[in-house]
Image (tube, rainbow, N blue to C red; front, side):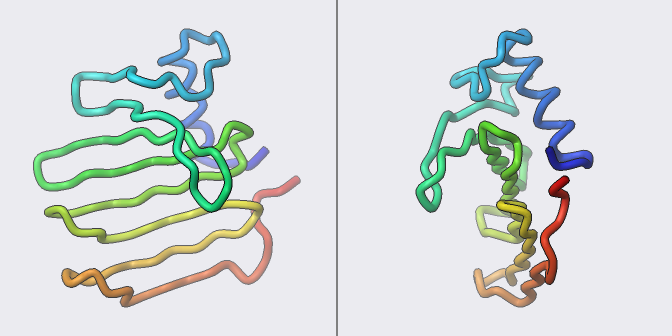
Length: 116
């Protein structure tokens, strides 16, 4: 299992929604109306649970795989994609976008990370 804050946060979030029953993607659950689970989505042939955090000028979409090994965070500011962080199959990458949606920075890990 990957170590770090994101997997721990996702595990706690899932357990809070599922009541500890092991439902890895509790579709339709929400907290305070601003955080809600949209459901399972297919991304590059893999099932990911998607939950969304809405704020006045920003939206964060957080995706994670059932085994917890994949995490993806997409940040939108004023409706435009601002950043994507992804950890999947031991590889990490970050993309930062300008106000027009163009990638202005892309960083990829040279080595596999977080796999024991």
